[in-house]
Amino acid sequence: MPSPETALSGEPESLLAVFGWYILASVLVIGFVTVSAMFLIWWERKVSAHMQSRLGPMRVGWHGWLQSIADALKLLQKENIIPARADRPVFWMAPVVVFIPAFLAYVCIPFGPRLIAEDLTIGLLYILAITSVAIVGIFMAGWASNNKYSSLGAMRTVAQMVSYEVPLLLSLLGVVILTQSLSMQTIVESQAGIWFIALQPLGFLIYITAATAEVNRTPFDIPEAESELVAGYHTEYSGMKFAFFFVAEYTNLFTIAAIATALFLGGWHGPLLPPVVWFLLKSYFIVFLLMWFRWTFPRVRIDQMIGLGWKVLIPLSFLNLILTSLVVLLLQGGSAGGVS
Amino acid sequence: MVLGGFAAAWLLRRDHPTPLKVIPYECGEETVGRTWVQFHIGYYVVALVFVVFDVEAVFLVPWAVAFKELGVAGFIGMMIFIGILLLGLLWVWKKGALEWL
Image 1 (cartoon, one colour):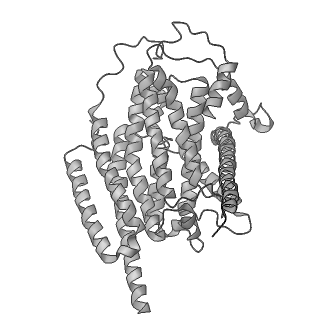
Image 2 (cartoon, chains in turn red, yellow):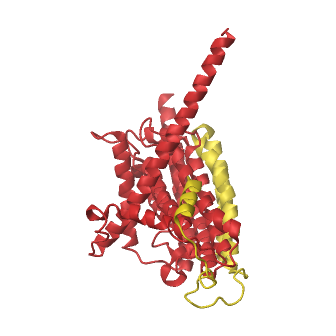
Image 3 (cartoon, helix red, strand yellow):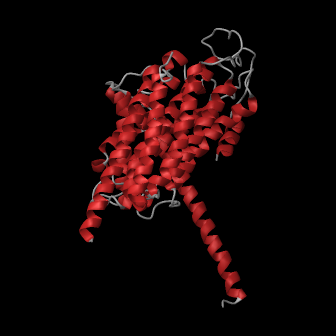
């Protein structure tokens, strides 16, 4: 039986270690996410520019790499404009509600074999659930602005995100059937031999399409179609409140890419380079792919968007799910027969 | 961190709200009527169908996790479930609820 002294002396230490780890992890995550979002904003501008034979930002730092920092400083000093008829408390809360889930999703993203803040057993479900909360924030923003463009943009965003949430989840379930786990680490570890993109090509295609819609990027950017809705739900936002929406958007972009990497592209597996580098390389490649989409495909109409989501992606993802489960079942039966 | 951002912005910025500056933005036009008006019925239908399919996805997740333990019985059970759902989707489709008016 342990003496009370050791129990007492042991407890605060372990508690301290746990809290210390949480604080360290959150500092690391916040640091990484902020730097990554700023990098992505700059990178998107550069990629867009070069795809259109422009140079993009060039003045601030070498090839404009300090542009995002300059933008952040500018946004910090911006005037605080709240529309006269806005619902003020909700107007203030909306950016927070959009921003915090975007960060919380990073708790379960496996950057390396041991580099994950908390490997929850329901990691994948947790990420999907927490990122859905942002929909509420977006609707709050559109509603509270009391502006017709904002309301319309928010409605469209909600309809779109909600429509593509279903195929997104269903396309990931194929991988879950293969691994029998929702833990991000287990999913990555089970891809040591073969990446799941090889076993789930249809699932990957559905996921990428649904994910593009989920982060409201062109071809699916009707929520903020600038030529008709000015900017959608954040039309009335400026300064720091706008900055939070903006950073959240790019944070979500990386989250989507990170999920694709972890579930379909073998996560941190890869030869020679350290695992973290592999994970980041693959994720940034997916991000680049999404940026490439932006300058390749024209924007869809709202009826095409709803039609594609419900009439193509959902039946296809069900088909993928049924096929995957059938094959797994047959293989399982075959191997069990072979053993016995 | 969000609070820090707001606080820093509060310290650094200067506000000069004027009546003209705080009117809702509408490309220089004055907004006609109320904003919180009746919205397009299509959004409501989409939301309804979504609720059905999201609840169904909640049932699918534990099934997928325990798939190999459930074996053939679990597979057949879930196929019946998905079949009923797909029938529902077909019905909604046929009713024209997925068309944008």
